[in-house]
Image (cartoon, rainbow, N blue to C red; front, side, top):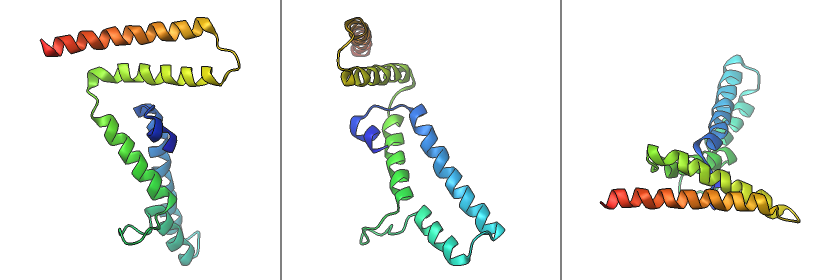
Length: 137
C-alpha cells in the first residue's frame, strides 16, 4: 500500500482488499476472544497490536495494522476528491500507468503497444482540454 501512496497510481477497487482484510482481522480477534480460544494475555496482546498501540503523539510505537489503516484512510481520502465524472478517466490513467510500468521492465519495448498507450494518453489529454474549456466557458 505504501507503493500506491508514493506513486499515486491506485483506484478504489485496488483499496477494497485492504479494507476487507482489516475488517476480517478485527472480526477474527473479536470472535476468538468471545469463544475463549486463546489465553487472556494473548488476546490482549493481539488486540493491542490490531488496534494500534501508541496512539499518543508522545509514543512512536504504532502497530502494523494501525499504519496500514492510516495509509488506507489517507488513500481513501485522496480519492474522495475526485468527482464522479472523473473516476473512469482516473481508472484509465492508472491502468495505462501500470501498462507502462510493465513495459519498462521488459528488455525490449514493444513499439506497437507503446504507440497504443500514447494514443490513449492523447485521447485523454483531448478530453481533459474539452472539459476544461466547458468549465471555463
